[in-house]
Image (cartoon, rainbow, N blue to C red):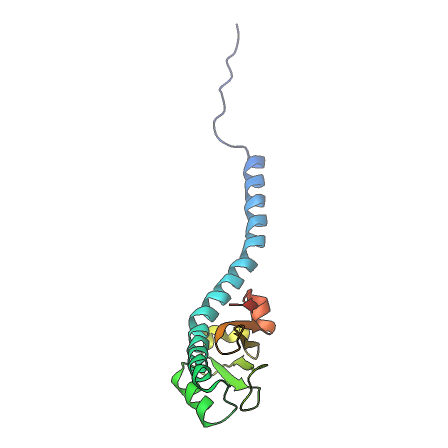
Amino acid sequence: MFIRMRESKGFTLVELMIVVAIIGILAAVAVPYYQKYIQKARLTSKVIPGIHSIQTDLATYFSFQQMFPGAGATVNAMFTDANTHCFTPTVTSAAGATSNFKITFAIVGAGCTELSSLYNQTITASPILGNNAQVITGWTFGGTLAANMGLAGAQ
């Protein structure tokens, strides 16, 4: 007589351990990318709209004056109009500049705890002038924060 063996159903312990190890490896790789994604999303929602508002005001000013404002009342009014509670903008060019204009945006902590891991990092913005140097065709982002978040270069 033959004894019939029961056919096993399910997974063995080794198979389950292999699956858990694979999930652990994937999680170890994915978590840093996810954290960077979250930081970039917060930066995009809290800082970039304010930067774009300032850029729009500067483009309008440049289209009428054919030069950029320096640090002073005009540019401070532009900064006041923009939502700047998460960053501090600073003009690093002299008044009347027609090229090499740059604004530095430093992430600050007052009232912006969502970006606490990005405090004191900076983004710089410089205009890209058209062929006739009478119109701004875009902006170039630079600085450590722009490079870390994948925002560096022409926008």
